[in-house]
Length: 395
Image (tube, rainbow, N blue to C red; front, side):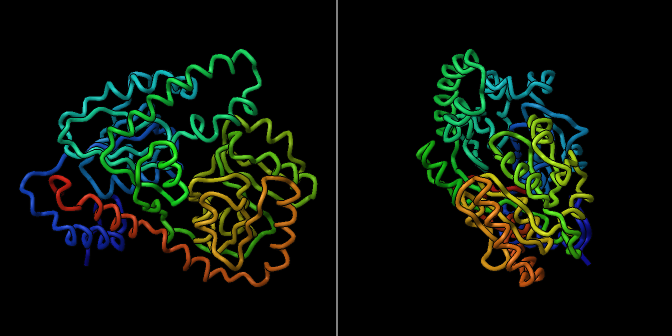
């Protein structure tokens, strides 16, 4: 019998033991010191799930982050030594502190670490390391509000003229800094082919694709209760507004799980059939997935862990056919649509309702297994173990 360790169930322990054996990790007599850098630890979304998997893979790793709210992260992350930056006192206004983040990241003292893993979609890879330290960046996306989303952010999302004038020079400085810090990374890992292309476009760096880990075995199927589901942070670039308007207008039931600065505005757009749930605990979220008719994804995602979670629950996905959805959504039982508009989403809903009876929940759940944490652990562990990449980690 395999004993439980590292905060995971006994059934999962064999995965980690097998990876350790395969990588011959006992070849080194001295343990490798590992640091994990995550942009901020203020909730539990896809990026934080990757951090959890890395913590299980490297039980002795220490965490560094710009902002840290212990009460909003998992017990596993809280159990680790977490060093927050000097900006942490202002975490309530963390979005406004972006210009100061480069300075804060470069203050971390990482001289004692052999392996640094940065988890990036905000600024994280900009840390300074020794020449002999290997730095692997797991990139969820280059900072979209500095690169491909910048025109929309400035012209559509920011309504104040004086704020636009202030943003331009700051964004220019941050883009230069962000581009330069790509040179500090030894190996880029992308969470999808879509993100790999973005990394090349922004930094002119090649990246290996390793899909993020999803605890697919913890999700389950239940007969639907006649509602559709959105699981998302409520921010402008997620493009939730047209979906909320459509469901309010047509009278279809929609539940929205998530919180963010767009909460009040979106709630005003929805009608009586649109229910906003705020932040939902993991256990309740699994029930929401299990009993919905389908997951709605109105915006372009770099990967889209929520889609995998829905599929693991045996539920289909209705998504904008761009970005990660093109890689994740399987044929049969799910629907992609071409444009982020009410008319296209409404057509997709009609198409879905015509094929809904043919959906095979078991087949969707089996398909989702390709995004398991076991696969992530094997692929990431193999990357670290590439010959010539430095000392091997020891537990």
